[in-house]
Image 1 (cartoon, rainbow, N blue to C red):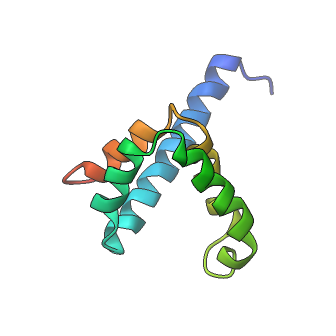
Image 2 (tube, rainbow, N blue to C red):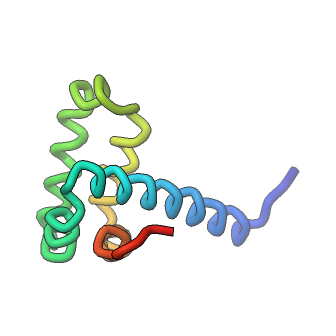
Image 3 (tube, rainbow, N blue to C red):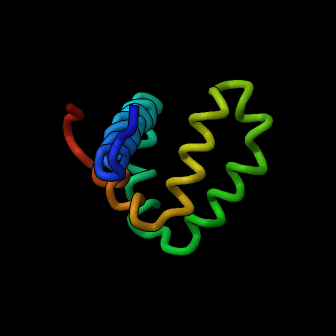
Length: 96
């Protein structure tokens, strides 16, 4: 079945949005939500360095969480347009 580019982009956004919600819930459960929201809002170019750190540490981090989750986090940190969305999700009082 062929899908239009518009459908694929929408599907990618939904999958990323679900994954962002998942990460926001995890960070909230670990008590890191406010700290991470502040860091993401003010990280600027340092977020890219954080992504590189995740890539380097991924073999060890993969022991506690799947590699796909760490890859997604690193990709978000590399893309400045995703950081405000993730920070907003972390700063929300309640998650949907």
